[in-house]
Image 1 (cartoon, rainbow, N blue to C red):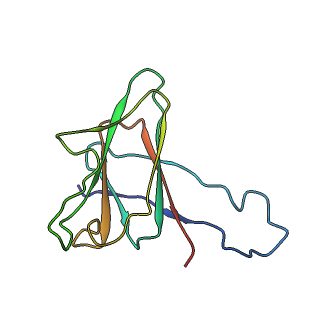
Image 2: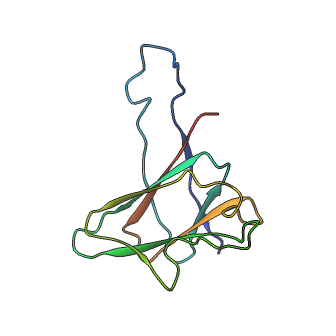
Image 3: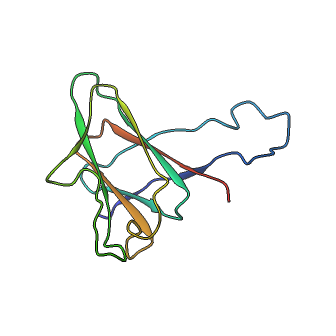
Length: 126
């Protein structure tokens, strides 16, 4: 089975039509797929909010990088140094540029060790 697609949510632009409709600026979280991994199309304008909903155990996340022009990797939470979120903790990443993060299929890859990790991916306006 392939990676789960995470829906990217748009952030309201600088001058939205007013008055704003109730709930139009809300965002939602998606539970991670800790078996197959997760992905979303990367444009370099995304902010990733990660939440560990487990109130009893810490869990880890990993954001997989690719070699950049200087042949550097920047994977967040790789096997050598996992990025751990404590009980009910949040973390925010990004925006991450396409160079060094975009996989060959145009996606950004996310992995976790538990379904209690959830993601909200918010795309900044142009």
